[in-house]
Amino acid sequence: MTTWFRTYYDDEDLWLYFEADDEGLAARQIEVRGEDSRPVVAASLAQVMHLRDHADLAAMGRYERQYGVLAEGPTEGWQDQPQAAEIAAEEFEKLWAEARRVLGGSAT
Image (tube, helix red, strand yellow):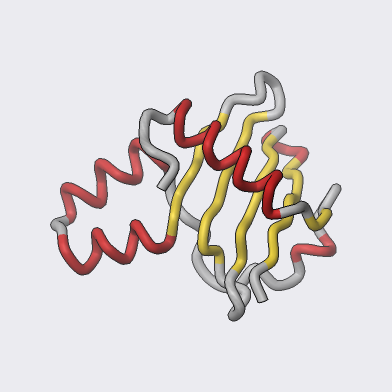
């Protein structure tokens, strides 16, 4: 079952939003700086996998510079993180569209 949730990293004043797949892996990730609410990451596992399979390292580097790096490994234990909460899919989609717009790409 897909889940959507957020956590907060106080040391970096950073909100992290995740869409986790059935296996608990990050399918999409958004990071938003708290001080100015500016998105700094909006990365997608599907896009990363497509680049890995169909492009070169330079394309992957361009993607990471534009959209950031997706978290690796399971997202388990997120409930124990500061200010952790499940969020609605609709809230995640709204944040995703805005983050991709700000970072200069399409929402897909």
